[in-house]
Image 1 (tube, rainbow, N blue to C red):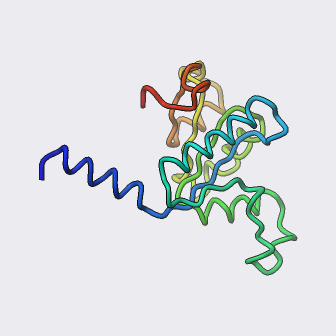
Image 2 (tube, helix red, strand yellow):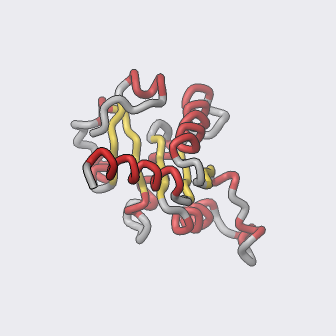
Length: 153
């Protein structure tokens, strides 16, 4: 099979594959960034039509787990992370940074896809060191405004 056909077949499989995708980032109460998280969720849904794309606050463990309502927020988020195929983290808020720091050493850390602004690419801070060990992509101002990656790194 030629590359063109193989790529087309792979694209069709990607669209058809059923995924559980979790999106973490700032809440809807944070004007600019919360709105961006919603836009990110919609863009992911367009790319993966058969995916179940959710925010943690839209997943109610009490419906499927005995005692789920008694779990702490980090405990609930760990259940969500374990149940998803990938967790896209919009790294623009203190809360997202705390989620990264909390779960970066968990068994499911490889599921994190961290989206960070390019201005932090050469940072030598402790949080930057934690993120650097994960699946991390850097975005530009233009990519953030459009919510479309132009340059995959």
